[in-house]
Length: 65
Image (cartoon, rainbow, N blue to C red):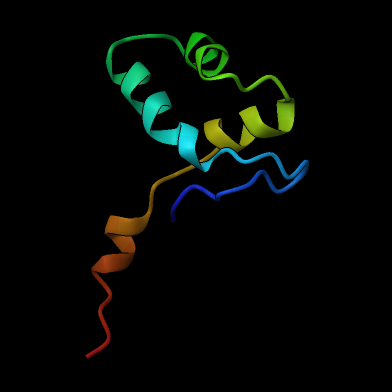
């Protein structure tokens, strides 16, 4: 749903980097360059960002009521 605050594997704080990463992708940078620019070097953190699918809009459709 939302990007985790910390990496699941190593525990590095990564949540604050997600917005900048998305902005760089929208500007047309490649995924590798965007991850390098925000400072993600470990493969576990990089996989967390590249494998993330934003499902908040899909989950919002199923309101309780």
